[in-house]
Length: 151
Image 1 (cartoon, rainbow, N blue to C red):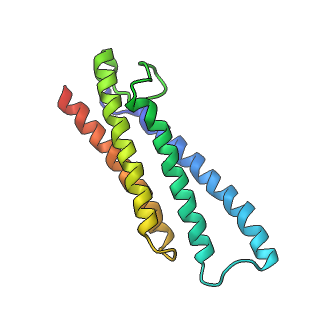
Image 2 (tube, rainbow, N blue to C red):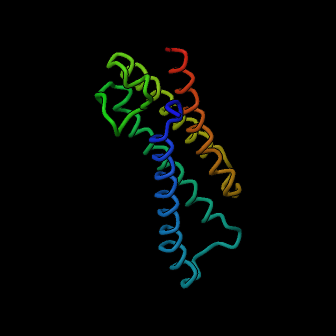
Image 3 (cartoon, one colour):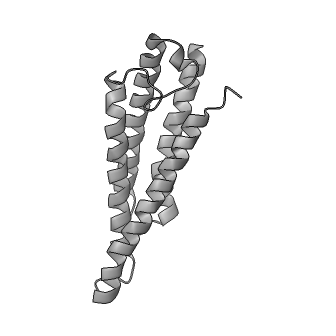
């Protein structure tokens, strides 16, 4: 049971819940004026542009969170960073694992922004979401593999 990263899974669930809450608020605040004023477009390109901007901003948020990890500015703690029982075993392991995780997240953010910019405006919502989630998930998996090889 100690190999299952329960705090990380819980943090991921909280992040997903918060981001879905922001999406719901965004839809209510942005789409309501369009429906009343008739300013929306028939082909959905305005919604596609908004979603693209949201995903790019979320990617910049990931990069912002990852930067202190890359720069080794985050000391061992119980809240922020890539935390497993092995990583918390020594400061040297902590900084190495978190630097790798930070770089992986920076690459994931860059890939996500690139995919969002290359995708057509009329791309499906699920495809845009996948273009954001897949690189971040890949970064998390790469971080776990890196730590497993350190052991």
